[in-house]
Image (cartoon, rainbow, N blue to C red; front, side, top):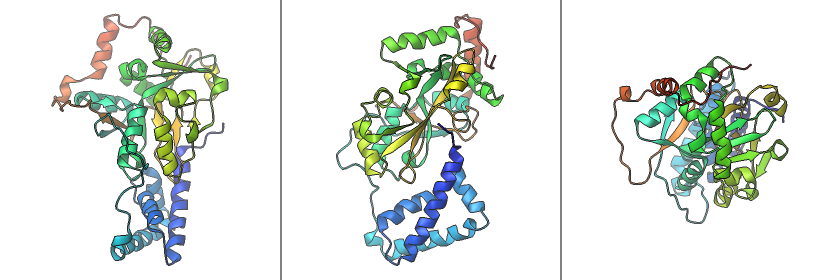
Length: 339
């Protein structure tokens, strides 16, 4: 499918939100829920909104809109929604709340380890969003999740679980490869581990002919990808309650994957919820390049665990990778550049 850079998509959505807010405010009797939703979009700290603020025309219109919304909030406080929109039924959340960590991929992995956190899986992100509602940071901000996409030279895709994601062990190498504009090629022995993980249900082989462009929320938990990452019926119902009927899926083009001599790995980014839209990015030069300096993850702590204070010098992922290489932990040598 044709790839449209996410920043452009987000900018268009923010532009539409501004125009929709102006139209509602001009109507004389704006709906409080609709205005609350638009206020969340227009006050978000995103790159797209930064572009709106710098726009010669929109940059002047935006403050006026936000000021009018603030006035309505104050005047009709009793009518304003006090709780974010969420699914009607109670939600079971087996993870603790998360800390948002930012930076490139290697930095995020290092920060999580230093703070005794695990990078949240797609399922944990879904649980956090259902628990806190669509107005929470978990919904208004996207980020990398613990699973990843591994593209095979035959065009098919292996989705690996957190335990088998090669981007964790080789975080710095993968980030440096992307910074140099190259793909990251995992070591052959590590890929064999992903193949074996499929037998344990910890990796999913997605044949190219079965890769959808979009997934209906009604199919969550039934079609292979959402079933594997734990985006089940409950999360589908939550998205539906937010006005989202389907999500888009972005992956590397088959022709591009087949041009590579080896399998290569990309991160998986769960996009935020905006203007009745969301997406999963298994490939894009914007969100899946691991040197993306405003990347983001959610770090979760297993229930009952307490934070452990560590000096940053105690955790050096680069050193760990170097030691692994010198001790022969890699089964074979690989390249971090295309060949």
